[in-house]
Length: 360
Image (spheres, rainbow, N blue to C red):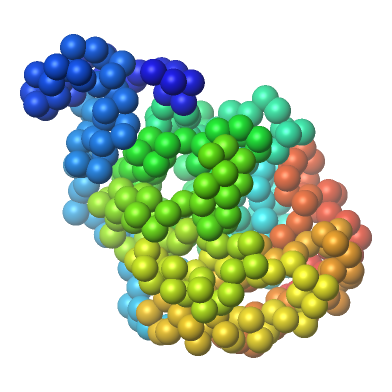
């Protein structure tokens, strides 16, 4: 056992896994040691489609989320409408007490959706309590909060970008690929049971960048395993593994196709010319992606980052550029969303409030 798998789930301790898969039970190395058997499941069981949880419900024949009647459209289809979507970062949204007020405020400004970050390890928010636990299980309270968020947004006809990461510490370790895929499998079962149809999924924020932990990017093989774990229960959910670190639009499109993703979550380069570059980059990304893969500019530079984006006019230029390129979506990114200990309207900089006032 290592620090990455500190707790063996009770279902596994009940010997269910061993009884169901006698080949592991009989194995001289794994079968006689519960901890070794758990590590075997973590590293190999998911790939072999083994499930340790005895209470896993088989997928019901209900409608998949977001069945897209026009898959070659550049836009997402939610609430029966195809349109360019304007998201707003709400990274700390799973902890805020002001979400109903924030959603009403954002909706009144013409915002179509919010971007959550399920495992956002922002140091000022310590102690952290994530939806995905280190052993691949789900935190019940955080799971309930996510369901509440999906209900509130559905009532307002808003979309949720459910983003996450394997990293559970900005300078620490990452969940192993098997454990992380298993956590997404459990969440996808819950999403399917709930029946909400107003979300997109980013399985790994900036997946091509080696942040913290193992300092390793998510490989294509790992991304395919996680995507497959979700697809087993949500066959039509829009899924991506977002990309950043100055990746070119062409390489981003190539990676999305290799991983079988339904859209590109593109974090356009934060450079001195990023405001003017939004439109040409969006056009390049769309051309490289082709009609089958949608494009979402998910995390552009915010005001305060490198002094590249200076005012409301710059934010409008970026948003209008993405819209003019006829890509699927663009997200207004702000560090106000990192710690939502007040209404988001009060946390925004004056220039950001001006941008939202001019957006609609």
